[in-house]
Image 1: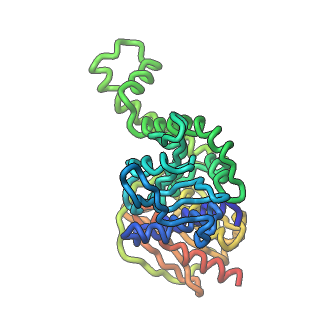
Image 2: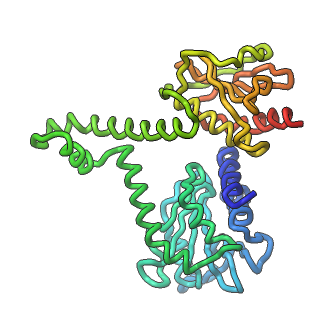
Image 3: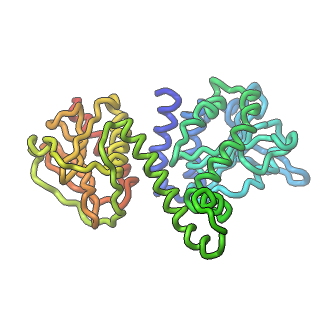
Amino acid sequence: MDFTERLKALALKVQNQKHAIQTEEATKTAFIMPFISSVLGYDVFDPLEVVPEYTADVGIKRGEKIDYAILRDGEVQLLIECKLSNLKIEHASQLFRYFAVTNARIAVLTNGEVYHFYTDLDAPNRMDSKPFLVLDLADLDESLIPELKKLTKENFDLNSIVSAAEELKYVGAIKRALAEDFKTPTPEWAKYLTAKVYEGSYTQKVREQFGPLVQKALKQYLSDQVNERLKTALGAGSYVASESTTGTAPVTSAPVAEADLDRDTEIETTLEELEGYQIVKAIACSEVKPQRIAHRDAKSYFAILLDDNNRKPIARLHFNSKSQKYLGLFDAEKNETRHPISTLDDIYAHAESIRERVRAYEG
């Protein structure tokens, strides 16, 4: 696998296993050591490259330890401090102390899913209070992958990393601020957007009237942009998001008939179905090339097929009901079992079953 594939494979592993992680040590073993070895390319068992529990004396404190130090040519280049996987990344005070007493220019604070990368842009040998790069494995920003690649053993380029850090820091911060404003518009932004369409005075009454309208417009705008990209990528028609659901027991049906997978007319492909298809496709791509995973929509379900062949069903998405969604999976006799799901992320829990069905068609 290339660098991007290894990163995505780790991201999938984190999503599938994070519910089982209960301790900081388990976080290190399951997620952070694979990040250091598989993604960054360092040998976690070579003390000349990776030193766990690295001792960093701070002032009068002796024996202070950092979780991992990554070395190159005998010099510490990266410091990594770990937190339990279910903890939010907030304070880097401990890492801040370590940074000043080593030669490292890069420091990382992580819970195994979110990685905050710091350097010393504001003052030499003094770690910045805000990260220059934030990597979230639950929501990968592919624009950050080339920058992350500069930290790998094979491509390590400290000067390039530091020179790009300032731009990354502020571009990333602006993107996160925009994301937050789209989610919950600030009063200042609501006022600014209202002034674009309303010529009267911005009174309390106008503020109360336009506040919800601005929020609704922003959400619809984002939805429209996603729909346009999906239309371009998949050649689909119209999209309507469905409501969220709750879970019930699996339902098993008779073997799938080939005729069942013929294309219906007057169907409406929803955004949620396409997002579910992309998840199944991403899982199946560990076994076959992505272009071999196809979809056909019908009135009552959304079929996902290998080679666009109705004799090779991989899964069905039953998303038309407003009360419950199901993921349909098939056994060797093509009997379908419908598994209730509450969110699209629940599909990942069935990743091995999806891969097994694809392998069976290939085998």
